[in-house]
Structures are given as C-alpha cells and as structure tokens.
Image 1: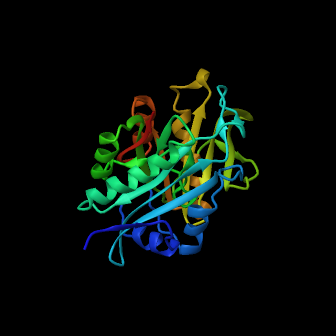
Image 2: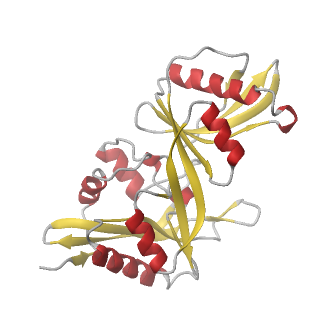
Image 3: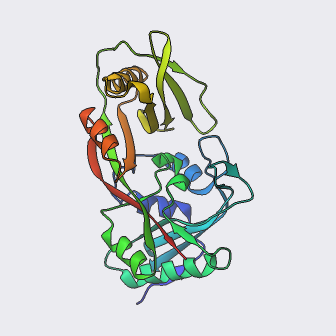
Length: 284
C-alpha cells in the first residue's frame, strides 16, 4: 500500500496530528480555540489573515502521515511597513510530515508550490506574521524539524529570517520603580504598555495575551535610546513580569533575530531561556 493525497481533510485529524508534534511555541490548546486559529484567524488588530486557505493531507490507508496548509493572505505591507489590502502573499503556513515519509512530504510540497505559483512570483513558507494565534502567531519553523528544512531547501526555498526563541516561567517578583500604563486590548488580544519612571515615559512594549489561560507573548519591547545602559530596561522587564504574574500569566515567551546579539543578551540577563532557532523561507 502506498500513500495518497486528499484535499478534503477533517480539521480534527489535523489537530490530533499537531498535538503529537513538539516545538517550544506549541502551547496546549483546546480544539475550539485551535480550530479558530487554523481556519479563521485574525492578526493583533483583528484583521482576517487569509483570504483563502487550502489543506492537503497525505494518508497511508486511514492514517494521516502529513499535511500542508497554504493560501493567499488578505493583506500585506508596503515599503513603509503599513498594512495594504492591495498587497498579498502566497504562503505555506503549516507543513508537517512524518520523518520517515519523505516521498509524501515531497508530494505535498509540490502540490502547494504548483497551486501557489499561479498566483505569485514569490512563495513564502512559515511566514512569521501569519502564524496561528493559538501559538502567538509565531509562524516560523522550529529547528527540530530538520527533515522539513531539508526538503524545503532541496526544492529551491531559501532561508529568509532566523530567530532565537526564548521562554520565561514567571513567579512572584518584587515591584520596581517602573510603573505601567496599559492601553486597551485589541480585537486580536494584543495590548500595548508604556513604561513610566517619575512621570516620564521611558519605553514600552506590546504583548499578545493568548486565549489559553496563563500564557503571554512579548511581541516587542523598547527603551528610549538616551537612557539605555542604565538598567532601566531590566527594571522595566521586572515590572512587566510582576504585573503579568499578578494577572495570572505563568508562561511568558518572546523571540528576536539571530543577528540581534544585544537583544539576546538582554533576554538572557532577564531570565529568559533560549529554546532554539526558528526559520522562515521564500522561493522565487
């Protein structure tokens, strides 16, 4: 018996398959939350991420041995980084297969590339911004899936970005001189915060509060350039962790570019643990 491809896949089968995978941002998630992210996802501002999505599954008999999810985004970004509904990307969003089933993986990838080549000159794979919200939209491929990385490269995909993924387990910490001013939570469960010292805004951050209880993701953080190097960044991070812990957050994760050594040093100094490298790809 050989494998066969099917374009009618029950999402519950995909969910069960993904629950067996292991990567640091695959948070525990109930099916109804996962299904919204997989099929009807939105970004931090509540904008629908994809105008269409297709899933193809590879089966050995009745057993799902791999799948690929791909489609066209509902918007893109112009040269100034502004959202534009006149720009879209062709994206392979999810692509996983059993390590022993390379032929099935190759066939799945070929089917997606063939379909997406009809709509765009460039195809992206594991586009960070368009990942699943139940995984904090961290869309990159974890380095532990070397067999998927290899098959992408063999088929002409090039690494676009590499990030370091960090995780921090929160516990009770002492408050600092930094106070926080939270802004209204967006439709996509993101929230911006100002760091305030002696009535002055000294920096800020944006976090994604996951629908799953007890998890938040730091999307970005900054401290005013004129006060960097004075320990205010670490004080701000401590104040942020103190506040989040008191709001019931236990797991607090983030990522940064592999080339950004300063950010990596900052996170590691502030008790974030390096969990590995993640990658995005593109193909002309």
